[in-house]
Length: 165
Image (cartoon, rainbow, N blue to C red; front, side, top):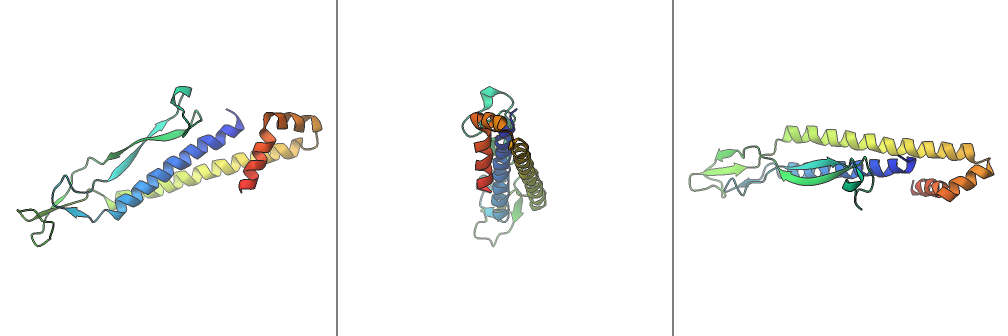
């Protein structure tokens, strides 16, 4: 795997963890919602990730083998709580409302896990960038090596990465 692929692999993980954190935020925002039926009640959303293990699995949104992508988003299958609250405007004829199945404690744990994974992948990007810069510094003095790196596009890619910072 080329050094430049590291950016793509880590980038795919950053994207996947961002989706996961967005779903957690949505779940937390809807945690106290109630509905008139169990079918209408908000169900917590979960991201299902897929590892990109071979060339057949990559595409424009995840172009590197070894990356990860969000395969799909599914509803949590846990039971929707039914609460007796006859005075609530959403109560059914028997006086029940149906809460979302969001477990706020589990959502906080999931959010912290996603944030930690995101931070780890930012560290991967920073480490790869530092390695590229050290390589360029070592080879700077040698015109022959510099020409070779330029012909492979590595120097221009490294400079591009630095300019983004």
